[in-house]
Length: 128
Image (cartoon, rainbow, N blue to C red; front, side):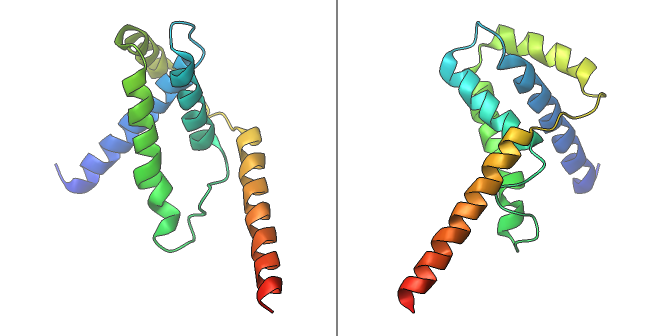
């Protein structure tokens, strides 16, 4: 098996873990901080807009290759194993349905970009 196939399998596993987190953040047996982290990770992953756009050289894929898997791993680590096992089993059934979009997360990301743009313009005006 080549490295490309291993990378594809890793991506499929991450997608399945995202579905499990999507289901786990609603479970009352999960601690509030684990639920919050799972919700943030899922909202960001399902958001149609990235915090760092993919067209930015190197940094554009940083969130997809490092930050998102790290967030998934941390959220999974905080969720009790029996709850996670149940959510993983339910996630297998949901994995073939359409991926939900989180427009609220997209709005927050757009607002962050607008804030950074506004701060950049003010900084440039300050320098001039």
